[in-house]
Length: 133
Length: 384
Image 1 (cartoon, chains in turn yellow, blue):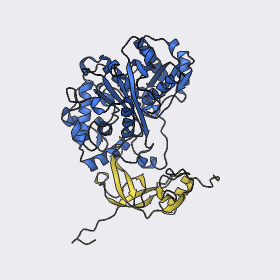
Image 2 (tube, helix red, strand yellow):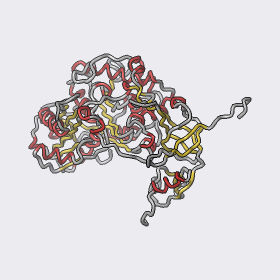
Image 3 (tube, one colour):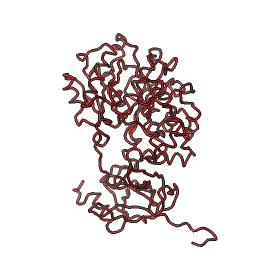
């Protein structure tokens, strides 16, 4: 196994810097892999390809955290359409309004203060028949 | 588990250390040592007999060395597998294997925590996971809450059904003089308590106490000559499905399914044979998930199953008879207390909370965020 030039995390963060949600794909297993790593958990092979997600997904599970101080916020598990799952949060709606099955779209969150970028999601508006898009 | 012989070892001594809020300055090794002394007294063995030493704690990096030093012993066999709250169920299987191989004959398994006294932040080193930590899940509660949200979505499980788990635990705790909680609890109390991570209020979450203890495991042959009735290890099973909640294969099916299956197979028993069930109730959803995965009800039916007092005192299935992590004590890695209570129930030592005619007890440990699951089935002399 060759030396790693960039860590899986660095590559992932570099993609985020470019506004992309990256994941890995195992060509032997024919399955996506997330979180990024140096070995495929399905085959043990180090053959992993980087791919960029279309950034569309569905809320798989959701909770609202009520901190001792500060406002409640959402934490969710998102199933991306490419078949991988990640932890994130859904923004732009009240945290308790996030629903399992809801369609969501990725965007980059830039926390500032030297903290690493991370992916968040926002609801995709659902077109209601008779009410336009 | 393949390779272990049903009934070849037994738990012969059990004890809690001080529980709840312990004296100022007590260390986790102090608590382990208290547990060891009391557990040895329980079976009539001495430190000189101990040649296998196991322990786990979140507060000592090389805990088994610290404990051996403290006790002044140099055991032939050491084990400090640490997989969270189920570590001690793993230790039982490992001790049983070591005894069978002649690597040791008397194994002590110990635990200690001062998380209430020193504060949870001091007691547990938080690891940063770049794929989870930025979202500030309140761990471990939020991980279990995510699993609960999925169970509610797929099976229409309700917050009232989750609350019924906490109420049943409290009713048992009121029968246990050692329990931390002393006042009755209603469904309404649970639902109206401070929200922590939806759907959990603070009453859906385990206690934060100090505490520890120890158990003594030896060969079935040696067990017969000791002070108390042996609790024979009839079955063991283990399963690790993930470490982080975002990697859990199915949020509504835990490794308890595989762990339980292996333990039942080794014991040649099934859920219908179990008289008392001790499952790790870190959160109310746990009891529902584990009763399903261990075969006490069908997948998805855990919510209705726990409602209406079925798992409370005088219900049809005795579950978490000491009051559980929800109402008895929860120092952070609760798995040892499941074994202690299971043994006491088999011996008939449980006073007001004693389950009549208890011959087979199941202890199911959980570690991490539904990550490491381990089942131990114990039985009386009649079942061995």
